[in-house]
Length: 96
Image: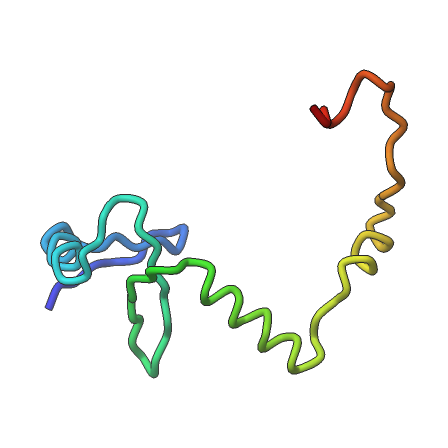
């Protein structure tokens, strides 16, 4: 078991020996996505091969609970003007 401490800002550092063991056990490369889950009184770290998978599942769960907001509503609440901008004819997408 490795022991660490939480600093004044609430951050904690995983001891180097444990980081190396995690990298090897989970095949973690720099930039790899990981998920943190609290189960009981444990913090679990899991490698994620598709970092958008958990986000998509969370969005679907929110939708099923009726907790989502239509993008049009958010745009209206923020006062964003989505009207097509008037561009001079020489600007914009080139169809050629």
